[in-house]
Image (cartoon, rainbow, N blue to C red; front, side):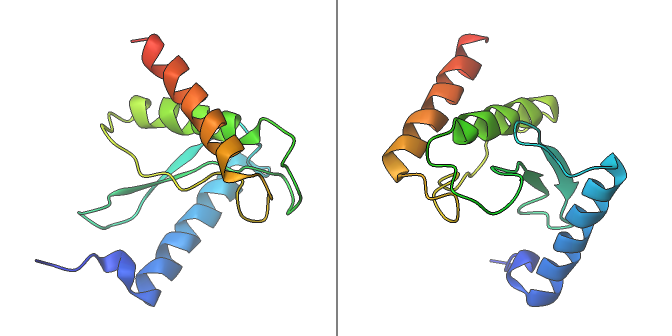
Length: 117
């Protein structure tokens, strides 16, 4: 089985640069509740969906930022015809949101998204 190119440091730097370029094209920092898609150049993982969970590194434990980011991810994935996405625990790192709270918010965004089908 062929290894994903995203595993190499060089490929990661290339994708990171593409993300920064895509954000720069918007003319402003990407706000919470928005998502952009960047092509990775990797056939196994062709897209990276970028949805910020905070404007600046800060505690967002008592916000709905995980919900907003998840809602944006699902909408953008649907817009691009993606059938599946892998999403980490949004806001659970620097954002200091408890993983149960993040999971509840992400699940609520998913339920709302699926109810629109």
